[in-house]
Image (cartoon, rainbow, N blue to C red):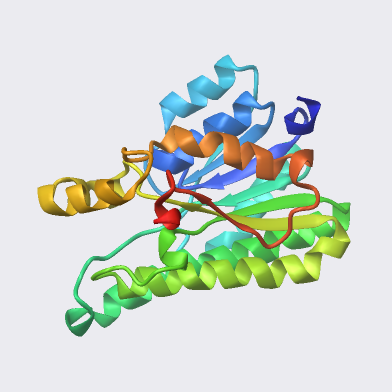
Length: 251
């Protein structure tokens, strides 16, 4: 189990106040990491307390990731607090559901800016620190829509296809420098982003009918995969997009 031990590691997780990000942050702390929690919401006291109860340290960084000027400060605060950054999990994202013919340009730009631009620039900033120290793990949260077209979410689909591409591009450049860059593509998870789908009986049924596991995923289902990709267990994994989808992509 030492392969998966993150004791002494520092992780930064975006969108850490709820849903998938919250579960990921807790999973990393359970594996031994100290965690910088990035959120644009109010301070997530519950996750801070949960991490402290595990004997790990955390800091909360409140920032709007759509503002590129704020991104260097996020990495800077993490390094200042913990002395280094070993793990970056780019989880934060938004989705706008509108048919393509009616998709507002503001929706398109908002989604691309947060889901893609902030991901690349945080990878770039964290990558510089990791290259200097000769090691690091970057995990970008992709999607089933990194492979498929989806319905009524053209901006989201474009951004998640691009996240997969950026992951592979960075992996090619940084693997030789001791930095592994991979991605996780969650399936249909019970989060705010899927609330509208779960509330539609017909759409929900059509989704569940395709999932071999027969259920919606839970944020906690991402803990193990993230810990693996953050640990020595993934030292020879580079540029992989790992589906955590209950078998969705098999059908």
